[in-house]
Image (cartoon, rainbow, N blue to C red; front, top):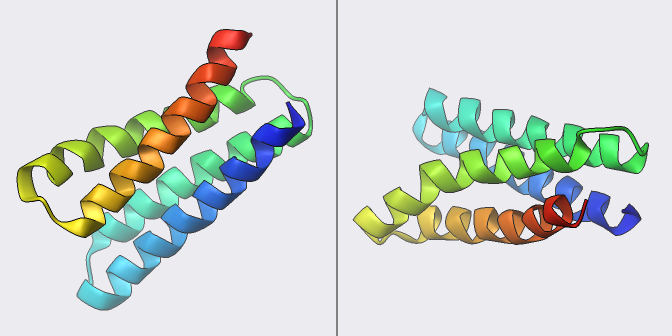
Length: 104
């Protein structure tokens, strides 16, 4: 279980920084709200995993589902690199935390 906390922290940082960057560049309140919300979910999941507390994997998986649900359809629709990159991050989280959830 220990190896699962590092990806959560990395995904937390990337999504949070992305949300802040989106807000700074365009003034987009949805960007900062979504980025920080997903980042907090990943961070809390990583923290709970590191402390061997329940629901850490589930929180990280929830963050991945939320991120995938918002970014993958937009990536398909627009073909732009930013939603595609977010889709890759979401898919990474879905694989890592989906496997961990199923292994429980």
